[in-house]
Image (cartoon, rainbow, N blue to C red; front, side, top):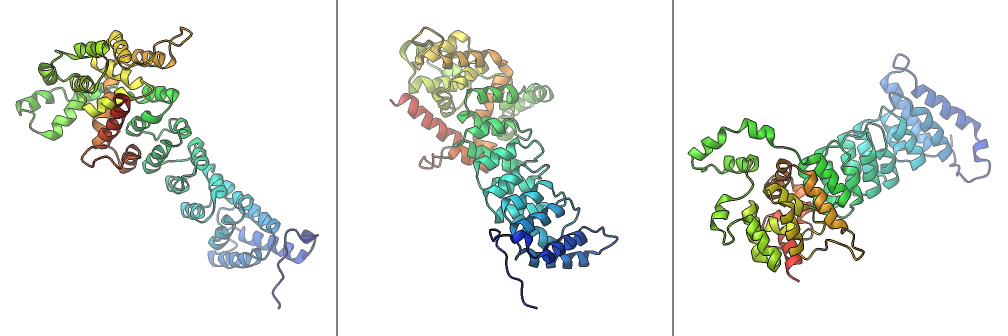
Length: 406
């Protein structure tokens, strides 16, 4: 028997020709659809192989009809599913959207072998697993990633979340969708904070500025034990520094030429904030100087409010610091400057304990507790800085240079 000729989709009356083909495709699709009591796995596979051969020569309308018929099945021959999943998006989409029998391996392979349109359809599929979402999102396509994030029935692993956090640095529109995901954790949210807009920053503080009260309760007696040991164990010392209620550095206060944090802030308000005073304020506040520089150099200003609230500074001290950096408090029309208003709202909305949690995460976690994906997000654009500095120190150094180097 000679091989049947391929019929082009745009050939006149193509669908009206070859009635035997249309009937046979329908019958074979029906056979594939038979329950296991009527056809065994080997027979189903053979029928599937024959359908693959026929569909490779058939029109797109033929393939669409078969895909529509197979989408509702609980079992599809692998070769047939593989072929149709790599077909045109409107054909493959019938299986991607409706076929419950597709495995994670089927979907992940489809995501790798096809293009953005297929991945966009897959991103909206109900109940896709962590394996599939990570594969779909790995291509870095913003619209596909946004679709996955908006899919409330999609499951995301932490590796995928952290990858998107890294991408959000250059595509801030993703931040809004990320913040709605239940999988997002404080470490990732605090990294995102530095490049998020005002509304997203507010959301992060409302959702992730958690209390350390439970940790303080369970470790209360351990502080005395650590003190008896002379604080020699660096592991417990670092953890207890994160947990403790006191934020200010008492040793720094004793050595400070200003006599205390309020006095250092007053000096900054009087003569302007410079590198020396900025470093001193950081020491007195119990944070690294370069972490403090990143906070003081932030354009939005919200970190400044967090620093003041965490250390017990008043709103008057906050205003003094704001003026010391020559930030406007009012507009040309005499209204409160939007940035200054946000800073005051941030100060008022946070309890001291929660502000300390955020501040200590910035000072502690950014250099020691982040995964490689989050570290890459912080390091982005800073490769030329010296290797001996931690990620948070490099970022803070850049902020310090921007703010005080003019």
